[in-house]
View (cartoon, chains in turn red, purple):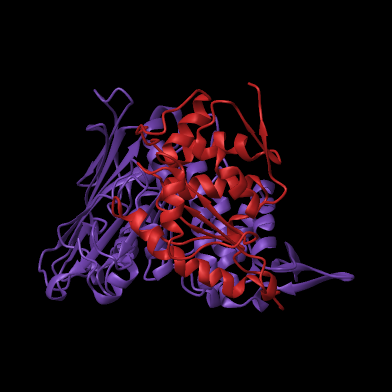
Length: 188
Length: 387
């Protein structure tokens, strides 16, 4: 039984800090037609606070691996790291210290500020959020599915004026992976 | 879901107690021979006994007594959570002095600490749903489970729920070369090594939803796969076949036996997953049905490492959907590294089994390493992954 191995490979590698980030990105990708088996999440460490270090340490390696293979395979890399107290720009600069991305590379860096819970709170409530505040974690990571579905279901983001700046900054990053994806400013 | 198991004097399990975590997936780790599969043996024997599948001598022969002990009694307890309320099942098996025969010395079932059934000295006392007064006393052969003999009726709905929970428990150590493609009759219960795969699949695929979801899944996993079908061979037997699409040509049909071991394993794993939500025949779906419990012994054997994470993701989604639980023994780095991390709000999801001086088994939760840089699988390989 011949198996078309050449077509069966991981298209998107996710480098993230924790389960909540993983669930968020996986769901977003699924809603955009990318099946789970095409996505590989690098197992992140279980220890609290060690996810940030893990992403920082793996970043250069994964970018270089991506470059080594991108000419032959249709692959992408999504990196997610909480900003915590840094600005998005500072967090990105810190990550890219070791290696800079080229303009057309399918490498997205998503930097929720203060963390992924901030985005989830905004998507759930729609109201303004304080990007310096700690919002509580969900009881179960999968509770974000509905709001992520709404975010990802059409071929566009519809961003309200209250959108946190770090989520707005994620739009061009997502377009590196999904070029057809548009960000639309809504008046709501 | 299974909340606690206690076993005494069964193979290497002596005064052994384990409380699985609340995670959908509980990973059971430890060296070879540390007793992980023995826990599954025990769960399977209790299930088979209390659901009336086999008698005491077949399930708890004297060879299951702990070899370095002289005690003639074996004790088993399991606790099962039902929406915050707890069932407690107790079984005591006694062996004759010469180990030539054995019998039930007592069997009890409680709900929230109150008796539903007590079986002792060959006499079973049944209690109604108000627990206060026995509804009847019955003489029963001590090689049988009294619980299994109680008729499934509204009068004993609490007891029936517990039996259904056991019926929905599946313990498997899948051996792909043993998965038979032929089937004489439909069967709802998979055998331990999945020898009767075709017969079981005939049963679960009667639910069109299960068959459809499995076919959709396998189209991604096995390129060209279209669907399974059964062809009749002779008077009674049927053979499981797979139909493949071929570009520009008509479909090709191959026997299941032509699948590789890895492909058979993938088919088995995804079929099990999609069967979890199916409601067994004869059960009232309007009732509060117990969710399933799947106990898989090294399911990540045989399959490519590339397949493990997608399967684990599919497992998490299906378990979340059906509220079923998976107890999984694994030595595979992919499974260890991915499944070891507990999710928010969940208890420890991984447990370390060990035996001191080759004696009895002990189990402890594995606390994620807060500081170290080594992957859990590397720690396990070095023997450093300790509670």
